[in-house]
Length: 129
Image (spheres, one colour):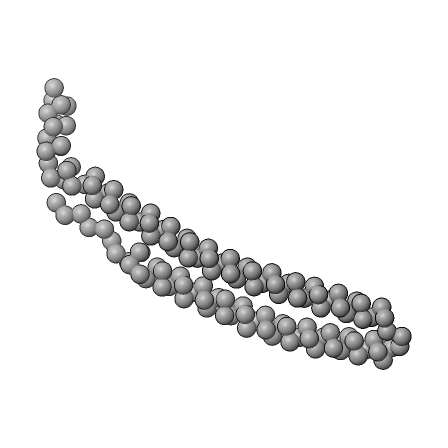
């Protein structure tokens, strides 16, 4: 009987009546915010992944063109010219890759900062009794 009274007293107390509803509200807000963060960051990663895949494809095509060109040359000077053109283009692509890498890192950092500073992490839930 003492347990029943204790349980009845808990149900009547303001802490018990406010606490579960606040937890549900806070939990729903955090789950929604987590889903938004994941969706936005996933979209960013998908875009970056697509760009890098196209860069890898371009590098493979460049190598294929070099191999094709080298098989068709008839002299050493022509082969040297083909290799110089390939290396020149390859170094240009490496410079572009480094710029893309920095731009992608900056974009991810900006997105993460914006998403996490939008109140998702900084505001602590407060429960008033």
